Length: 267
Image (cartoon, rainbow, N blue to C red):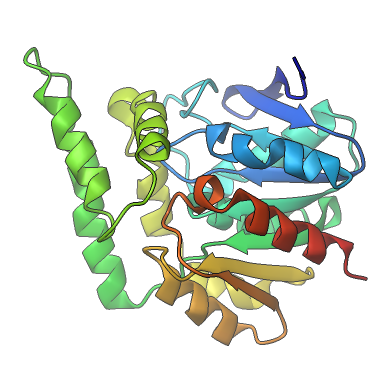
């Protein structure tokens, strides 16, 4: 049996951070969407490691097996996990990748700690119009009402909420995995999306100074926003995968990893 993934804990700004590593070489810290956990990067850990990447995935505070903050952090607070994790791993700097919520956290980390970030990958960035922000904020408000019910109907309610996030899904096993991991956040599941809605990615993206890749897929629920991010910064590299959904890393692990590695290898 190949044991390629190593897990551990680092001291972070809100308690312990749960993380996973694989491989050796250029370091890449990966930050997941919400509500989910670093499990979303498991399909690509070995692919990245085999390409000479030191792959590092982390559970953001309150999700997966990382400690939960007593109060909801903002994106600037979540961004503090990056230097904490790098310190724990004795890394001066690393490449940084964020998916959906993680893309906002990665952006802010690059702005707050520019010397600790080499290259930046925004997988599903979220620059919003005022109308889009109001729509998403209203939709995400449902997370604050979730609570366990003795008849178990809360599971069906939350399953339907995730299923309605986009028109079609392709991989039931992946959907189920990420649904279950989202449940680990409990009644504070709303923390990260609340921070996302308060953060203006459309204002932060123009301030990025690092070599950056906008990575998206045509089936992503926020594909239009990723295209908008590319328009905001035509100097950024841009890659899009055909098809897929929010769970694109499970659905297209090979092409996804190839695009990530190709960007990291560019001079």
